[in-house]
Figure 1 (cartoon, one colour):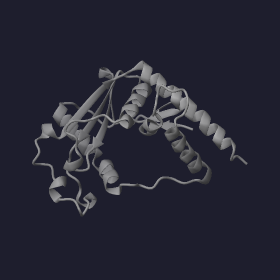
Figure 2 (figure 1 turned 180 degrees about the horizontal axis):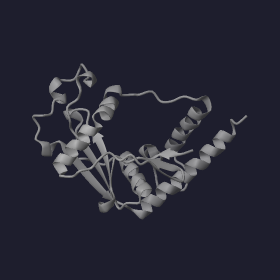
Figure 3 (figure 1 turned 90 degrees about the vertical axis):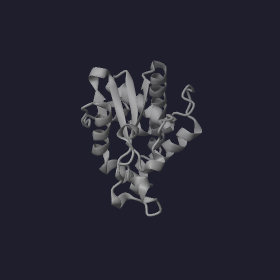
Figure 4 (figure 1 turned 45 degrees about the vertical axis):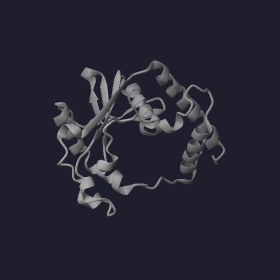
Length: 204
């Protein structure tokens, strides 16, 4: 079983413990079920998801304009052991990965990012995979295409040209941490072993 960088945060409660917490077991049991009876998650928030996909390039362009950089979308997926991921932007000269998040609206755009555990472990997974020293989370605020605006939302939430460019990108950067990285790898090893044992119960 290969774990995506974007989901490892869900497995990292009590990272210093050498046994799986109940929350991680619940998620792993779901993964086993999906494997055995062949089902996938439904898209829980269609509009937010689609804006993130459709407007990614525009968000990268906005980031470049505000930060005076010239990044292009990274297309290299890296897999190491039981971990895989594809960061949005990679700057080897600065030993940096950047994860671009396109805010759905003004109402969901964080002026000051408070790093959730989910995103922290995603960034740490990227630093491990790409062997870099820093990772940055960047929220970008761009117009929402008309077809992805919820009818219950005020229109001005999705039209952002009245906001100065420098206020439409929020960033937060963290440094690599060997202790936390090892905690991540240890936890994924436990998860892999658990899934292997559970799948063996259902093999014909």
